[in-house]
Amino acid sequence: VQLRASGGGLVQAGDSLRLSCAASGRPFSHYYMGWFRQAPGKEREFVAVISWDGKGPYYSDSVKDRFTISRDNAKNMGYLQMNSLTPEDTAVYYCAADSSTGLYYGASVGSIKYWGQGTLVTVSS
Image 1 (tube, one colour):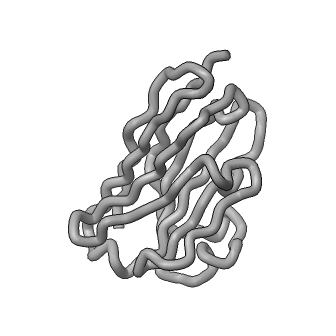
Image 2: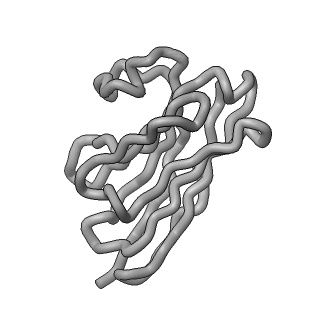
Image 3: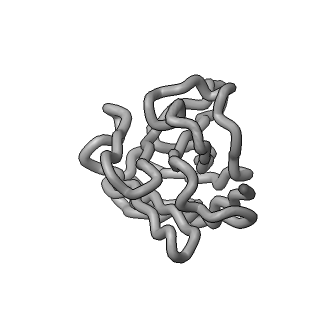
């Protein structure tokens, strides 16, 4: 499956932004989907993950209650709604997918099979 993330941009602290992840090549419903981010000088970190059927989303503590992950399998799309953004959320955001449950249960970044190209989110104070 090929993934393409979009929707990033420059916003102010407190603003909202919605990222999209377009999947192609194989039915998106076959895959768990997640979002990760990488800030300058830091390692890529987990943000959120959702099951193939939309159930049981999980979030990192740093974004819980502010971000919402969702998906529309009929449109082969995934989303990350980000509210109450802070400068600490500044990063390149990547969508990821894997048919293995590893993505859903906290597999390491290096073991995740499919990645989008990333979209930059910059939050100014």
